[in-house]
Image 1: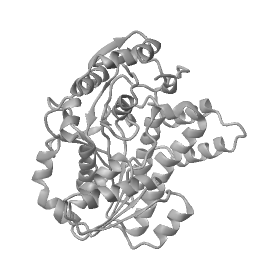
Image 2: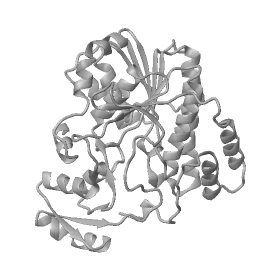
Image 3: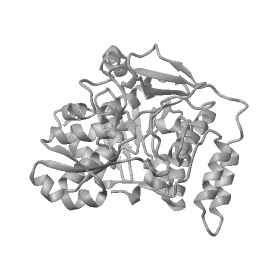
Image 4: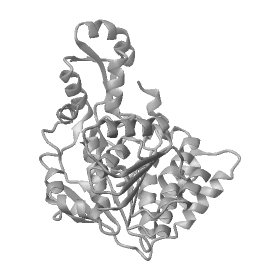
Length: 397
């Protein structure tokens, strides 16, 4: 499966092998007898991070996630592999911010490293104010809570995953992660913190490529916007980048994959085409969703797959991705395949408590308004370029 992923996303090899090999002994030294807590460890990226930690000399790896099924599969996967590990591996199906999580944290010995991989990540989740409220809790407020837990435990590092969509955000998902970064930079005065921004994780839960796989399993058409370009990393690479940031990032550092001849953005049409061709199907482009649905069975019998390629017209879609913004100080020299945004504590930054207060006031309204919530984000993030098109991805195949 891994070799196939690389071919589908247009690459021949993995990005970070040279950086990992160069620091192999240092990774083992930094993790020797250390205790790790991985929050959101049941998701695709979280599982990848756990598997990277298991390769080290860590003393314990505890994993928290709300998905009981994903945690069960994670343990089965690790214990069924040939990899030898000695860490104390335990999982807990609980939610950050719950009374169960508070009780759990209060009864644990200190963790040396706390990694937060939990996130609501879908642009399609922005269609209503209720899901957006949950997104704010998961992406911002839970991150602050975990940073506080790390500080109280005296943890060596708190790592929290960010996203490329936090750079010049055009949607609330990206804006929420940018707000998270700002809160964490503030908290870095009392706790060492690092983050990572990276691209789409190929075949991660709920991702476009995972959707391709589901469409084929269900004999359904594939639909993608033809004017959108994306960078892709494998789940393994996502796990490697997060662990490298956690172990080697200085306070407030944000790691990202360097753009170069090996790592370029791809059109979604090109990725879909390679995926289908790798399975022995020819792309058959249809003029509409209806045509793709109607012609599907006949085309599939002929080893052709119905595809609908359209121009993007939904809210929150960015035509291209960025890993950093103009004005951010970037270190391109320390790592072969990784760039580092060097963030500094801004003593003149606005009071972020005002954002918390504004969200609390919004939640006290009898009727929750998505428009009002967007205005709150815009008032605290002037770089947010949200444009409401009154169309969302749930109106597409």
